[in-house]
Image (cartoon, rainbow, N blue to C red; front, side, top):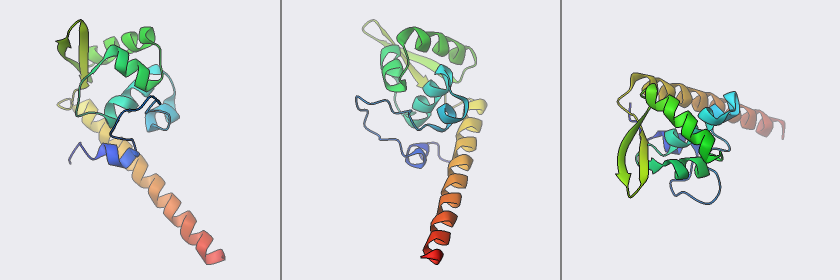
Length: 129
């Protein structure tokens, strides 16, 4: 199952903006918390690596909290250190990890379920009108 399709399924914009990209992320909505917000961002933008500062900014969390969460995610091998750019350490979602693949599959199923429910609601609404 191609991993790159997660971006289109979650509706995340491929281009990063000043806004946080995880406001409507599935994990953040279900679980809340810093780690869930970071995972939402990393899942939506898995093709590239990002600095801790960028991850914090686009996840809508503080740099301190992002650093602590990234340490946990790195120990679990869900996120991996990729390189240094100047003094910035860069991180990327570890797409080779089985747990990461399970997250992606689970989110795809949640999104598909939400789409199905919304489709059924719209069809029922059209029948009434």
